[in-house]
Image (cartoon, rainbow over all chains, first blue to last red; front, side, top):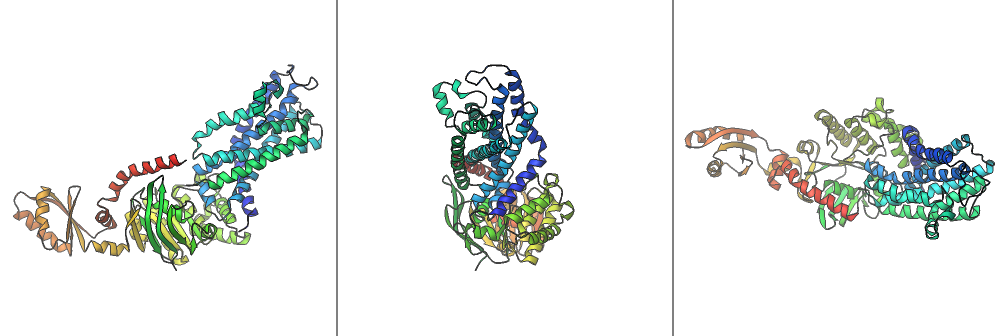
Length: 256
Length: 331
């Protein structure tokens, strides 16, 4: 038996794409929140002088990479946790009883989830450009996609871990409030982390999104705390760990 | 060699025994039934045989492969229709089949041929490109049965295939199942709590209760255990009736259940006039109604477990809740 079953990965990805295209209201729903954040915070803080932020850039430019990071975080966590919906609707059993090895099933879900998350991240970036955000060049756009991809993989992995540990969708709001939102606020997506008390900053260093947002800022607007390459390496490290843990817990969980 | 071989298979949930040392064999091409009330352990047994659940102890072999050691080989050899629908509602019927066929590694050509064939078999060709969320319950069931067959499994598991369907659709599904078994020579193991389903479809039936197999035989042999006919008598006062009927030499077995006395007799039609005479002879004894019938599996179930399957379901609800509770604890 092959360890990596490309056909299975492809068909799992294809299913994700079909569901994504057919669920327009869901896509609009998940895009609405980052757009509201972008619009209201961006407009509200336009001329504010945020402490710790360089005076050369206005807040909207500071904010856009953070909001893209937010979009990746939310959509990817949902994609990982969506295993629970498959469990709820019985389809997970259909997947698990096929002779496809579990690694390929996890990879298929990650590839599918990452694609839908990337589409949404790029959409947000596009809308930001309409709102006055300027991208430096094509290479910075492409690099931002690399960062988006690894943020997506990291949080799909994390979502899979939760989905394997929970048996129904009732705990979902708990995760929303106690995992997703803290990850978001601690990442420096909305304000420079330098403003936070030192002990909270230490916590933010274990938040993978911190490196994702800082990296996105580096490639998109040239403002960063860590060099872009360091951010990328740390983020890739996180994504590997999360995928392995996600696959491990998914493998161990019983479907029925 | 058997299509399915089960030896002392057991599954516990936190010490609660859901399936308790069951053993049976299913022959190639056989249509085999597990009959029992909800919560008797049928689905747990199926889940173990289809590799979705690990057995606590015991051994099982499907299509010649050990279900705990050779999972992929077992998965390749089986098709399964779960008790609850396991379809993607946001995909069309054809897409669901396509997904399945690709997961089993069928080539493009094979896929096209097989999907066309099973769609015809379950009569869904017209509806193939409709989203499954718009399907009726019966259509979903048929689609799932079709899906279970795409990769030509040697063994097909059907877990309560007609649960929640109306009488007409149920008949339809029964015909499919029979046809499948006869024409395609697929070994089929089905679970059910419908007596008439087990009786109509299965070559052999295992009655399962509280996780144990109580008895296993052909429906005919099971009914023969009760002998000839069943005469059900409603009589007042019932205790007196019981005492009187008990003494007749032609009564092979007498039992009382829910205010009705059941007699197992040979040539029941000749015994009804005798009962009429008793009614006239015995003062203070009134026979209110007499019913003569061939024994059904319901009678067999009552005989072996002491309760009808419906009563069992009520008392098993307790047990079900216990299983759910223990499983939650496990998590």
